Length: 95
Image (cartoon, rainbow, N blue to C red; front, side, top):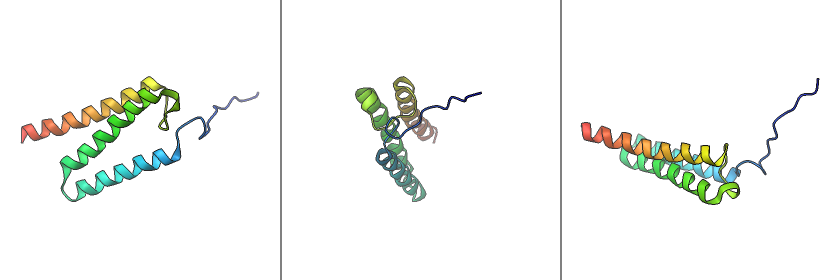
């Protein structure tokens, strides 16, 4: 019985340089949070996610950041960015 394996290739998927930039920004956010700058850390995470979502919509298949379909990637990135921002805002309002 022959098995069909999904086609996975860096040429077809995302670019490693873009992934390392995102990883660096997540690390910067973690360092900011560790030093007590939680608002800045949240802003870095949210801005990164929103920029990636917007970039995915604009560049479509030429985008260096790809996980699934354009709609999935864009909606997950944008919803994460807006959601993290709203969560931070709601915590600040409660305090």
